Image (cartoon, rainbow, N blue to C red; front, side, top):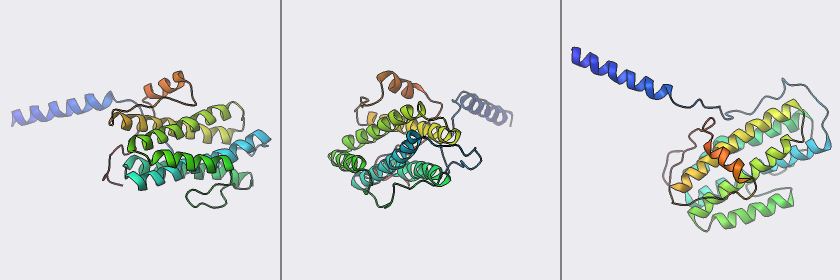
Length: 224
């Protein structure tokens, strides 16, 4: 009996020691951000253009990831598209609704965009991502790279509290997704070099564990 009790106490001690030393995670968006509680402020033309772009840029991520999941059945694409990117889209939509802006997403069909640049990006990224599994994962990293670059820039140009709240959350999510894609690429002995953000910003993201969460970094056949 004493031996069993001692073994149980030791197990509990090890469990507490391990989990007390884990990093504190910053929660990622798990529901659309409520911007209604923040003040209604005048929007500048820069802020309006930024909201319009981010709405379609988040749709770009969702649509490309769902398309690449259908091509390769790599679970990370499905998880990020359905658990995060749709919520990111909805959070930006909350800003559009609050300020009674015209939603650029007139057709929510996968692969359909109002912005010609986004339309071309979708075709280009899907074409590249369907060449191989590694190319697909690099496309995922590229999208998060672009997203972070645009959000970093946008945060220097906006001052409305509700926009800042949404963009801060989107950045945390994109940084988390970037780490997930890089970690999955390592399983293929492959790597990604940033095309938009600086190498210092890239390294800072990879070294920051405060917003890491499980995005289902499985290969084919993982649970949805």
